[in-house]
Length: 431
Ligand code: AMP
Ligand code: MG
Image (cartoon, rainbow, N blue to C red; front, side, top):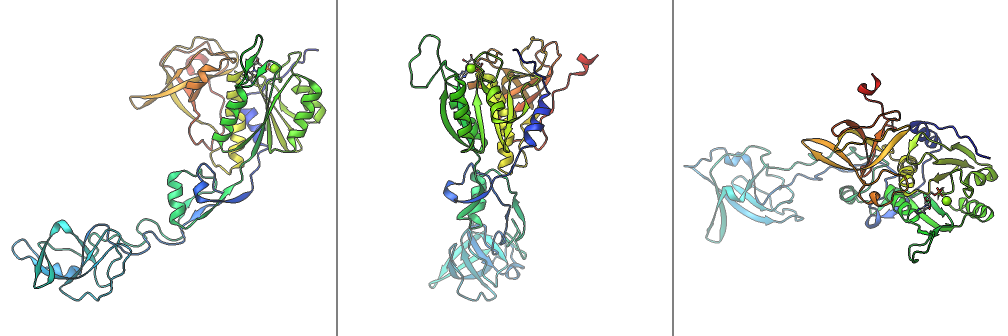
């Protein structure tokens, strides 16, 4: 019997998924393997940066008072009593009329209060002694890099939930994090369903297609910060699929299936959810592609039933699974970032439902533009290779023209703290 399903709005579906969000545990990982992971704790400075007053350049540390009468006509002569490189510590007291030759990063000699760069001095050697002449005055603090001028002890440098990248690693190393507290990655299982599926290494056969979803989804999970576990393909057989899904659920934090979630004769996921006793959060969303996207919950674990159609599968992951993974990783910005921009081409299709058009973004005259890529059909796969954004257009619209303002969901950005909103109709259309 054909089952009537009630469609909910996209924003509502995201909200329902996020009601089941939870945060992962902490673990420690060597700093050399930490990139791409998420901080489980804030990073707070436990010392000042710089940690001591130092020279920011190669030159001479002087007592500024000694230069007070210096001028072009009457240069001041100072005796250079020692040379101290970065990492060294001065060993001599600096008396009036004396200076120390220092390099970038050398700690300030105690009695000195200004740095004079090489270029502003004339070096003189007389009877085995080194001198410099200075033709201008310097005041206390000139060219000194002061302790704490960059960062003070106690400053919060990074929040928990920050994604670790090269710049973050520099900060972690500066503060001695050989082992970095990170959030354990959520383990996300994957089953691709469909008797028609061939694995990637198999030659084509009549009636069959290669399974692209399983590999695409693994990459999407990794990009979101999760740990994919691919369990393989399932032919459309109820008992086999039920056993596979219920066993897999025990081994993962969440399970993604692709395909089999619609109302076809061999779409068994709805019955599998029923037999599992799972709570189906929704099984129809007012969106294209992927209106059949279903999410169910069993014992607190989510089952993401993504469409088999590659574009719909891709969009379903980005809209619903990605924020769940991000939240697990303590991210403060789990939602996809949406900006206003303009379309570069007409998109004449009328939309009964909110539509997410696979697009490629660009910048022109300080504005972001989005160009739809390829055919806009849920079964399309090749356009995904060029997609870096989704243009969201509201249901009930009559189509869009080049130059129209639209919502653009940026897929390669860290994210937003604002939950995804349903796109609004433009004023023109509401009139
Ligand atoms: P389904 O959601 O199972 O009805 O599948 C919808 C369409 O997506 C069908 O044309 C399938 O052949 C195709 N499809 C299903 N699974 C995959 C997959 N893993 N990779 C590529 N295409 C798929
Ligand atoms: Mg199928």
